[in-house]
Length: 302
Image (cartoon, rainbow, N blue to C red; front, side, top):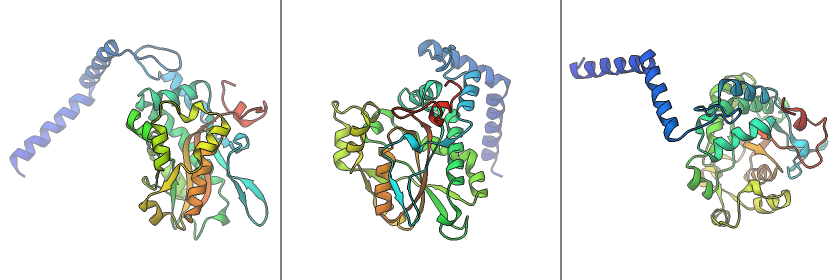
């Protein structure tokens, strides 16, 4: 072996031992403390200093997303699915209720630069994905189970979000979710594939998103969401090539009115894809949600 390369390898192993050993832990703790003086942070759950999410609140967050449930009943804009037997609503599986700690974690992750929270939120989305896969009727999947990939398709970030955030929150969550659930999904007969770049914003929607008067999706009512979502997405050349005949599960971070999933469903089905359901990290209770609704009792905070 080249002596120079050998010395470089030994140096790298030495640095790894130091950095990931007790000395490295002390250095990282000191750097974290120093960073906390310059840009102090507090736990989004209990306001403990120097931590974005403390261990106790991380456990609470896990508990709040531990039992995914069917969330489509309160989302009035979801598309209707018609077959020879019945008319149903697009099935949507959610990991938790969008309130309290879950809502604060999602907002901090998406809008306040706490990208590290993706590691705490991803497992919740993974549980929603597993439920969404389990709700797919066996006869609706084409071919032999596990013999073909299932595409996981999420809405593309708006141009405004790309400029302000610099990352796609749903794609980050999906990466985290697949890291912990891909094996379980394959055991259920599904081969999940995250394929970005199938969709893009329409030119008109991209320009609207830059207007300071428009606000973000979360600031609009249900009717305004539906109106703004129609025609907001377009297929890319890659999408036109891969989507015809594809089996698809939709993925998003938060379900509110269902208008975003409805637009995804419209564009993808028009391209020839087969939509079998959707998975979201959290769902908001709709207007007039009853106490017995899963959206109201899904969280220990309720």
